[in-house]
Image (cartoon, rainbow, N blue to C red):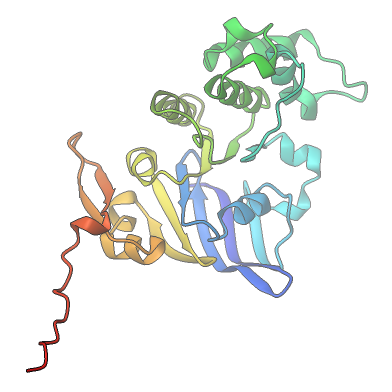
Length: 275
């Protein structure tokens, strides 16, 4: 199958600290690929490298069969949309205007939107169920609504790949599932490759085609969820005991962190009183 993203022996440092070490993996075109790992494992740094915002110290990244360094920023933005973890939205821009910003890489020298650009923005808002919010200001929306608008902007960009850094963070359960369902629809309806960072192992188990599990900047697991989400591997990654069972939904794994009070503790040593 054709590769959307290819990473070969990637390494990155902040000063003397090694953040990523010798990463090699491939994301197939049209796949839902989720990156997992504890805080500080290098997930966001990896995502910024894939988006072209950071240059690795060593290694190679290929996007759609071409070295990422061979793209201009505009060329890359025409093929790949990036939704970072933190997006500041405290400004009086309307939903419609923000979604239209997704057309920026495709506009001419004057930067003027055409009728086709407005049609694509309208379709993106309809697809993400935010069309009824088109004239509302972004700072008037809930967190879940804002996230769907940002995804609409990414769709309006007409990318072949979407990169998302924790898009479900700080959302309630209903909005988390809504975002994940939307990503799955993009994969099936539009053949868009989705590469996403997540801290929710259970959502990753249900939605991902393949998982990348990072630990201290290296690959601890790579493959289908059923292969990666082994309790010993997860305990090594996260440093806490977990229970891995089959989900009641069937065909998926369910990961439960085990509180300390449920662990069998060895009896305390007892020193007999002196006679």
